[in-house]
Image (cartoon, rainbow, N blue to C red):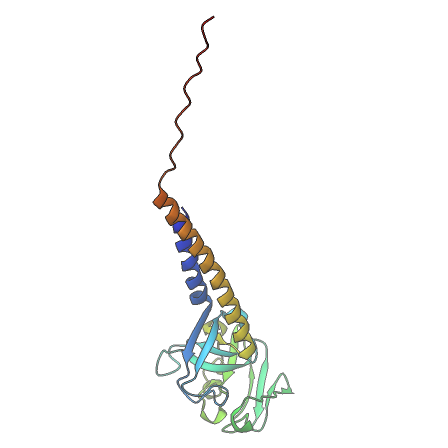
Length: 211
């Protein structure tokens, strides 16, 4: 009984990490300078209900690009937001978007002007390297103003603090589960090796002396 429990706990450690976290190598310059080509990005697996403005996300949208790989871009607007650009400044709901992460301090790139109302359940995305990112700005006439479904998002990149906290929690949890699993497995092995405990012989019946 203890051996299977130990195996299950050890397997649970691996499944916890595999189901909640991931990692990818950056394949383009679209997210420079935040993420350089070739960088390894650690991620948390999420769904469309956990997407927020400013998130750097991996999403899957077959048909938009020439391949079907995950695309890595940043969320600029979510459902209900108005995202606009006058060729010099990006605004969200009329307020200038302060983007310290964009390459060269240039939030516009090619100078495209647009004014988009993001439909519910969708997001407007752009790369941090605005001069080299084929993002929502290039699909404004697709009937959805270049937005993508929020549920196309698969993973969100960790920032430094988030990664440290998540990895620490995973390591501690995995270590505890591994110790419990090891202890259960060892206890089960020792019990099976010893075999069933010998039962003491029954005491002989008491014989009353003759009167």
